[in-house]
Image 1 (cartoon, rainbow, N blue to C red):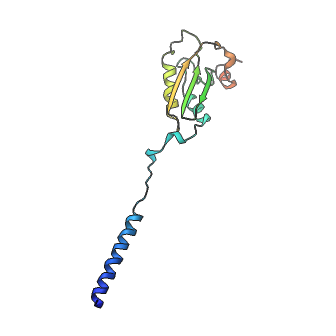
Image 2 (cartoon, one colour):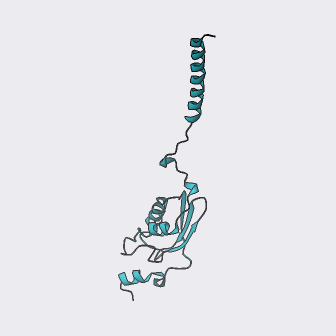
Image 3 (spheres, helix red, strand yellow):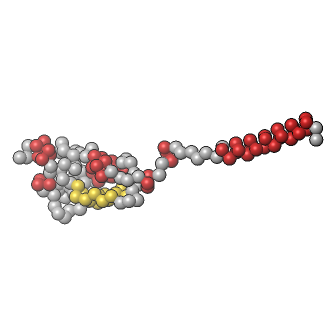
Length: 141
């Protein structure tokens, strides 16, 4: 084989090897923040409490958490959150809207996949369930 033909064969073989290496290297896995798997995240209980604490009873200048309206917060490994809450009175005018507002606030917490809020009446709410901060705000000392 002449030197020219040998050089062409070498170049051709090197080009094929280079293309094979490039195709192997071009397979890169990508990750985008919006593709994040919520199930792999741990739900932060303090983040749930902070979210609930943004909700106020429209008639009382204290958030529902400090009022003592939240009885149970269950956090599950699969991102589900279950809340049991009560109201200050069975005929509370905010009975329909407060659970929905709480649910929506919790749904915005990182890692949460599903929220269920149940209103319970047992035990009945009383002012002893309020935090000291809530009592201070309402002058109930």
